[in-house]
Image (tube, rainbow, N blue to C red; front, side, top):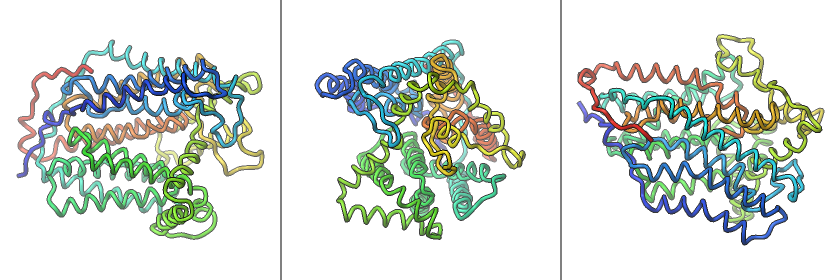
Length: 492
C-alpha cells in the first residue's frame, strides 16, 4: 500500500514577489495614462486604468490571505485578469480600433463601454460578496484517503481514455448526437492528466509513470493544436499550471519559463491560424497528426521569414484583433438601441436545450448564435453562411436588456461563481476535488463567448464529476472508514 495523500499539507504559500508584481501591474497603467499621449480622452484612459486595478483586486487579496484560508484554485483572480485584459487594459494603454472589422472614433466611443464594463465588474463582485455573506461557511468533507497506487491507476486510466475519446473526436466528422459527450469524456482525460501532474510535482510517481505523464501532456497538446483552435491548447495549459499550483503550492523557475514559452508559442500560432485553416479545413486532406505538423511547419516558415520577435508580434496583433471585446462592446453600445433594437432575451433561448445532452434529444436545434449576431450587426456579409462572430457574455447582457441587463446579469454571474467555489474550491480540500473544480471552471473562462456556451454544460459536467468523486470516495480502501477532519477555518 502506497503513501496516503494528506490534503491538509497542500496549502499554497504566497511569495512576496507575486504580491509586488500584482501591485506594480495595478499601478503601471495609471501612470501610463498620465504620461503617454493618445487620441483617446484622458478620462476614458483613467477609467480603463481604474477598472484594470479593480479587476486585479481579487488577485492582490488572494495573495495576502493567510495560506490556511486560501482557496486552492485562484479562480476569481484569473477571471478578474481576463476581464481586465478584455475590457480595461486596452483603454488604459490608449489602444483603439484593434478589432479587424470595427472602426470607432477614439474621442467619443470608449467612454460608455468602459463605464458599463465597470458597472458589470462591480455587479459581479457584489453578487459574489452578498451570497458569501448570506451563506454560512462550508464544512470540509472527509478527505478521499486512498493509496497512491489507486490514485495513479485512476490517473493513468482517465488519461488514456480521455486521449482515445479526444483522438476519435478529432479524426473526422462526428455525429452531433455524441459530439458533446465525446468532448466531456476528453475533459475527463484532462482530469486524469492533472492528477498525474499533481503526483509528479510531489515526487509520488515512479520513472515509468513520469514518462507516461509527459507523453500524455504532449499528446493532448498535439490534439489541441491539430484541431486548429489554439484556445484548446491554452485551456489545457491552464489545467496543467493549476495542477502544479495545487500539487506543490508554488511555481518553480522551470515551470515559469515553460509557461512563458507556451504562451509565446500559442500567440505565435495564432498568427498563422487563418493560413492553417485554409489548408487543413478547406483544402488539403490532412490526417490527425499531420495537422499539427502542418501547423508547426507554417510557424517554422514564418520564423524563417520574419524572425522570432516579429513572429510573436504578428501573432499578438492577430490575437488582439480577434479578441478586441472592448471595441465590439463599444460598437454595440453606440448602435443599440438607436440603430438596432434590444434583442429582448432572444439569445438565451438556447439555454433551454443546453442542459439536455443531444444523445437524449437528437433533434435539439443546433446553436447558430454566432451567425445570427454577426448578421444582425452586419459584421458578416448577408450571403456569408460560414463566418461566426463570438458574442461575449458582457456584450450579450447589454444587447438584450441594456445597462440594467449588464448589472443584473453580471450579479448573477457573481452568484454562480461563489456557489461553484463553495462546492469545489475550499481550503484544505482533497486535490481530487480541486482537480474536479478545475475541469468545471475552465469552460467558464471563455467569457468572450455567450452565456449558454460558457455555462450551459456546467450542470451536466458537475453531475458527472460528482459521480466520479463519489466512486473515488467509495473505492475499496480501509483508510476510508477512519477519514475525519477537525474544524478548519474556511473563510476567504
